Length: 348
Image (cartoon, rainbow, N blue to C red; front, side, top):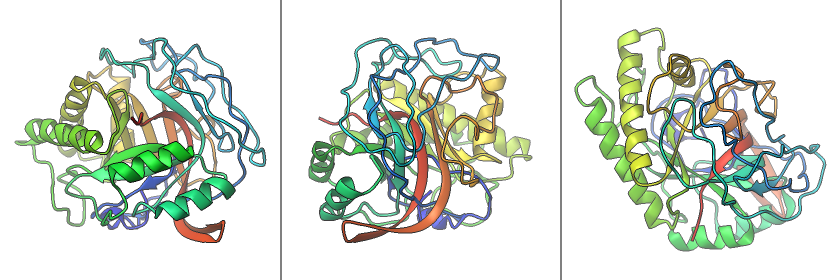
């Protein structure tokens, strides 16, 4: 993800999702950054498709374009659209209708809040003054924040429950990111790594910790929490299975507390492993997929690298460009750019 996380100066060419991610990790790889193209008027209450049995053969639902800036509810699907230069106005509150379960998931969760539009991520949560300046002048409507994990690489002096309340009240939507244990076959060093022996127990404890960290920041149940899994050798089947076991345990722990489970990974490795498991109807998979694929395509449909029927119905994010220095309202940040059409945090 953002600059610095897991030392993630990534060397893998992938893409970025449309959200502002605030935080970092301590692994190795490249990071993405965000750019501003303009905001689109909010779409009518978008929904997370209510078809809980979507499979790889189904048709992908429309995704929010990188230019749309709106919060939508989990009501019957109305697709988001908008050109990069469109201006933003207003948001819709979370809906009350049934939300779609992710591929092959049976978790009963309350409807999520869904954001469709431009998002950015950066290693450390920006100062409130910067967030206010960017909200007024930038094309972004969502920001990703690193809420925890032993592999989170950047200090977070700004990231408090008060900061979360203030930026949310200003109109920002937040995407919580948790940098959990990393693959055993990953190059580089990480403070916490998964092993075949601890994958299940560590996934469960890290999932519970992610919930505790989110709750302490005022992100209530119904929020989506994203697990950050950096790149690894996906051709190593033993390693891939260990990672999958960890992710499934993490998802179960997050679901048990009433939160949606999201996943951030690279299109060519970590995300590909989860997509492969979805195609095989594995249980306890993420509800939303945030894939890194650095192709410059600010969308979540034509750029989607996996089977079209996976993670449809407003459950995708695409990190498409990294390390972009941008200035709005006199405030400069280096960010990763993301196109977003998926669940976010619910605050309050």
